[in-house]
Length: 280
Image 1 (cartoon, one colour):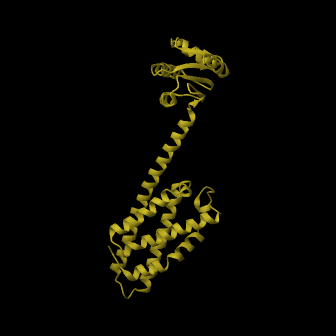
Image 2 (cartoon, rainbow, N blue to C red; image 1 turned 135 degrees about the vertical axis):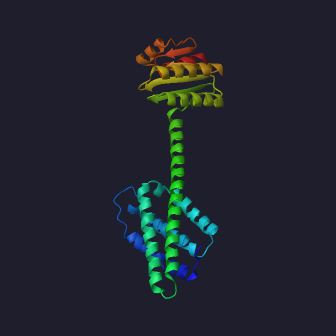
């Protein structure tokens, strides 16, 4: 570690200048980029984050490796988890890493020129090499953290979509409703089956109103899987009343030889509800 208190003090003294020069030289055209924001609060936070990066990175000339890594990792986690940076394309963020590296190397060049009689060429080259190496390490670490966060967000969004796409709504102590809307593929039908069985068990209901009037398209495989769900619900004590079945879905079920012996079929959801009310 090329620790040098003189260089460290010089770099830290110029950190604020670097931030202002960096921000004033931004030329961002992507309106979704954090760098294009006109919001004073976002701008102030962006400058703070940039300034903190300078000050943390300059610690390489004073701290040992583990201290430096801990400080930089904290900064990386904040930026990679920041909503505004998450909305910014990754290549734009990496572009700013490169511009910041150029700033650091330029500032070291200023120090080397000012103290050229005090330090050897070898020492100066060591500084440049060390900064370049650590910038590459920091950049890779940031990309890894950014990718993990992006994957986690996608998984959370997909879970929310799955939850919203197959909601079991409790209508009474014994009756729940599952309205299925949109196109149903094999993957979604599996999710619907799992959630329907779990939620019916959690609610303690003994009847599920399954309404298909909002289903745009369904194939034979999915029709079979939905029938399997109905049979599975029967095994845990939940009877199913089916409504809104389109002619093409009914045709698919008949072609598959699916039995409706254990299913009450009604033409509409309203009729299903009236039927269940009359049973109570």
